[in-house]
Length: 393
Image (cartoon, rainbow, N blue to C red):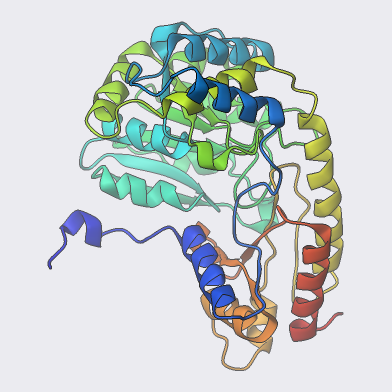
């Protein structure tokens, strides 16, 4: 069976592959601690689960509008007004099967062959491959540990060409956990104001998992870019609803029309009962959000301290999300037969029983992404095992 060139040009999601590998090894009876999944280890709050159950009992099992129920759109509009000071109308909102689906719809609706997508690295694994699926060229802007994993205005300006069409900004970041300040966003905005053909995709999925500073996306920092910004969010992370598959985007109404057409020919509407559960999530009590972020902050502090004691490892503090992104090039050089971060990840699985994602999957060779969306007991055991391989300073 010969696959299309499109399918051959991309690779499977590395994060999902690591999670599947860990599960397969466990099924064989091996003791594997998985630190690869970007999934909160909390249950979906009870009032949200009850809303989903009630939707089923009340017969909400039929199609809705392709782009989501009007009641859900109103809840999303309320969220943007309450949390971000951004005002939208229903025709500016599209609800999709997860934030990933919203991003895919955006790229399919916006990009043409030969267009360039500006992607700061380290990046979320799917941005480059989704660009390729849309016929566009990913243009990576590298920002390593020395500059705090954040691109500068000068770097952005230097990367822009007449073919630049889309820029991704993900803050707090997957995989680094770093967050741009309002001032840093405004400085990037000043560059973008001079390039009116560029649309900005603001991936805000970790917005509320933040413990240092205050959240600000580029539309908030630079209101002049409101009509060119696509704000993408969802319920997977903050409400621990990864499996419910609801994401959404807010942007120019004409762009929403294009995204809606793409969605109408792929999935149609997102799952109806999940939409009603999301209404309960967005409209309901938000008091559980801050305590969840506090748990992640506690884990972050523990993991950061342990990592920075390891031989050949450097790790910057994060401001949000639930990932550590240590630089491990010296550790790689110290291990016989380990030549890169991919081999290091395999080494940790084989010799420590710990699964994590190599940094090269995020455009940063020599790093490793460690998810601390798991219990302190598992984190402690996993770091003990890693320490057994690398030793301490």
